[in-house]
Image (cartoon, rainbow, N blue to C red; front, side, top):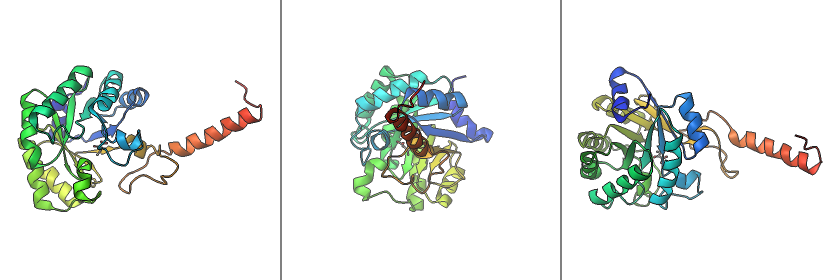
Length: 258
Ligand code: KIV
């Protein structure tokens, strides 16, 4: 049965952990869904891992919609969440609702994700009021990379706790917390009624999320390993490299026989 934002929120009350991954294509989404992943995120990390760009900022609404349509069409059970790309939330509630409405009209997605703390609470409340389920995203905010001057562990306890509480009060059904210290992530998880889904934030969150290319080691040749916080479960780069060498050899040596 298809998961809903309400069911994901209820998982916390039931003490059931939430497994979430990013995905960008049909086959990936079909496999992850079939195996039982709870939440699939069409993240603006597609700028990094699919397009090979250094930040998420260039990702457009059309590009997110293109991938969200493919993924949401593939999925039977998982909740499909789609990132609102830069700068729709930064522009305010009207622009955020317009962008989210396009995502809902042109894809079969279930919810959007909004980066930001207390400063995005009014926009999140307006989205929720418009009938658009929102997953918050606090802590390290990749869309703020230029202002932050890089990607760092977040240690401002009081500010972070104020942020997650404001996002919960605004009506978010879950909050992704990125690169908080494990202690702050644990405290945030304890004070909130909605689930926290951590990335680089320790093991005490209500769920975990990782980026598809990182967890499966589908990395470009220049990248030795995924970021430090990632637990890598497979090494697709090694498998593809070996298989491609074998294929090239077969073709070059006339040993390619089907
Ligand atoms: O876009 C993305 O992949 C994210 C990660 C933090 C999961 O938001």
